[in-house]
Image (cartoon, rainbow, N blue to C red; front, top):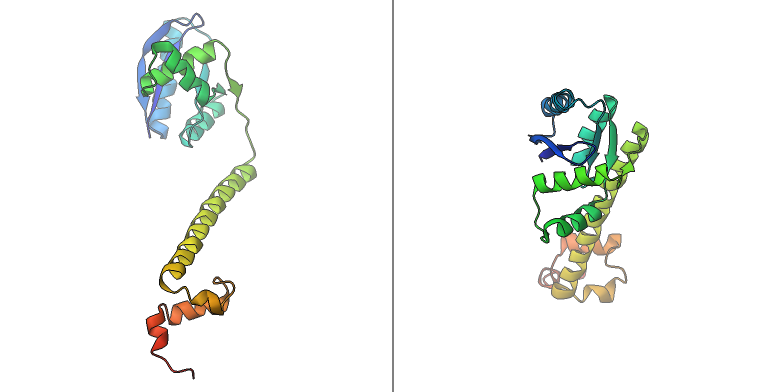
Length: 187
């Protein structure tokens, strides 16, 4: 996933050309050189890096810039969308357009500060996200089993109150259809 950097001065005048970058160390170094070049070219002493915290793509560049003592701020993605529609009356998405909207919002003070969290919290956030994904897949699999049983083997519900119990699942594993079960003798 790529990023686009745009720059404006404190008056909101666009300076420099847009910079496209990837989510890697080399691109982050190019971003730093781009910022420093614009600062020296326009006699600017400080910079604020603003970004839209959508997905997870912003995390690496945010952390990288923070480690280099940049003030990193976040803009609300909903407000970016609203400002985009107000600017040119279209909701169309463009990374260059979004980057310009974000710089304008930062210049006007419509941002919040990033909060650095200890690594343990970052790991916990990842674990919780992974757990949510696993639980979603588990619920989906259980729903598929319920649907399959209702369509192919509805009689199973007469024998097992809970078709997700060990006995029911073992029966389904050994005899997945009524036809297979009907071929057998009671013993």
